[in-house]
Structures are given as structure tokens and as C-alpha cells.
Length: 294
Image (cartoon, rainbow, N blue to C red; front, top):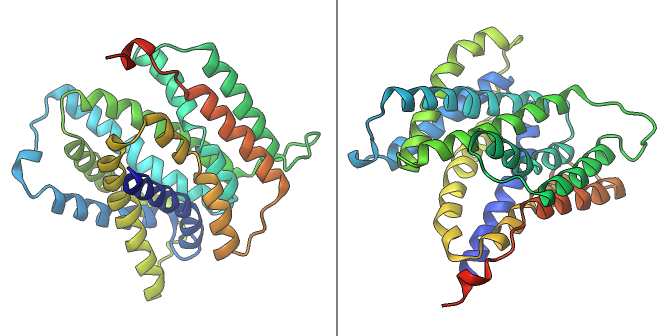
């Protein structure tokens, strides 16, 4: 149990650090090119993990359409908007916005998957929105100036929620590794022409350290960390694991201080408490007493 919590915490640290590493990478690579190159290494990793033919499931027409939508929206647009946003957006604020993904996912699940939307979720959403407003305005509530990059981060959050919903639909019939491989492959193929259509100018680093960071983050963040999380999540209580994942914004703050010398402000801390508190309130579920008595 202790080992599982330790490994899950490592995953949260890796994911929280991704905002800082992404901020560093967009200084050396144009966003669409960065997205495409990362997908190349992610797909190579997934192909290696899928060497066993039993992972390659046959898809019907409906599944193919969902996988294609997942690849375009949940992979390509999601990663591309993330890097476009980080060109100007503050990484800590970006992490806080993306921390509200569970709330939007719950709303979408209520609409498309007929899951129950509770008063607790609505209350948590209001608390989280207050926190986002406080962070975005930097505590100056009388004047609102939203960085254009943050609008792209909102798109990242929306596409991430859509990705979760589409993955839930597919996972009822298809193995998770197959879904991940096929959707990332679609995202890679779609990204190639957009490198030349969207990136003006096209920027590519000649630094070995930048390439090493790109490859490592692609493999570790989207590959190894995800596998470790999925392998260990079954060993711990789901609610406690959810709280661990909500620590990502705080990891981003600390890594920003270490790697970018970005000071942590009182506004960010207060806003973080509102946002994380709102997410916990909206996603917390009481244990069913009848289920615990055996």
C-alpha cells in the first residue's frame, strides 16, 4: 500500500512538472511541430508495448468514428492547444484551470452518459470558478484581463474532458492500450499537415538538451507515468487517489520556482485552495454503507 501511494505521488509530480517543461519547450519548438514530434515518440512507445498481437482489436464503423474523433479532439487538438497556450500563459494558472477537468467531465457525463449530476457537484463548480476568477485576475477583482494563452488552455481542458468521455464509451468494448495506440496514431497522422499550415515561423531547436527534454517528457509523462498510475490505482482507495491528483497545481508552483525562478504568490495559493477544494467537493462520493458490510 505504501509503495502504491509513493508511485502514485511520483506520477503526480511528473504530471505537475509537465506544465513547466512545456513552457520551456515552446521557447525552442513551434507548437504544432512540438505536438507532432512528441506524438511520434509516444506512438513508438505504444507500438513497443503492443507488440503482442492480442492488443490489436478489430473495430466496427462506430468504433472507428469514435477513435478518429478521439484522435483529432482528445489527442491532437488537446496537445496542440496546450502548447499554443503555454507560449504566453502562466504555467501555474494553466495547471489550476486544467485541475477543474473533473467538474466539466461530470457535467458532460451527465449529458451524454446519463450519469447523475448532484447539488454537491454544482456547489463544487461554483467554488472552483471563484478560485479560477481570483487567480486569473491576480486578486484584482475589479479588472479582468485574460491572457489569450489561457483561452487555449481552456480549450485543452474541454478537449481533455471530451477525451475522457469518448474513452469511457470505447473502454466498454476495447482494451485501453488499443484505444490509446489507435487514437495517438490518428493524432500523429492528423498533425503532420498542420505543422506546415499553422506554424509560422516553423521553429525547431538544434540543442541536444532541448531534444532530450522533448523525448523524455513524451515517453515519461504520456507513457511511463500513465502506465504506473493505471497499474497502482487499483491498490488504493479511489477518493484518496483523486486527492493526490489534485496536488498537480501545487507541484507546478514548486517546479516553477525551482526551474523558472517564478515566485509563488499568495493569490495563487488562495486561488489553488478554492479550486482544489471545489474539485474535491464536486467529485467526493460518500461510501455506500451497505457495500462495506460483509
